[in-house]
Length: 76
Image (cartoon, rainbow, N blue to C red; front, side, top):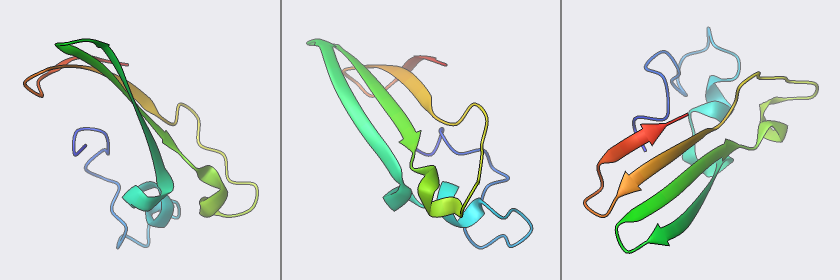
């Protein structure tokens, strides 16, 4: 999960207004799909409603392909 957030996004950083919502896992929806015994797809989708009224974040969220040993095979 640490690979998902950019290093510049921290909940305690007041310079980044969305940091409080984008850097807290309680506001990130995580979905896991098991494609086979050794292949999983993990989706991270932030709930932007916690970032404030009218907040827009382009390209929010990510999808990872992960093997059975927890290694990231691909991300987009």
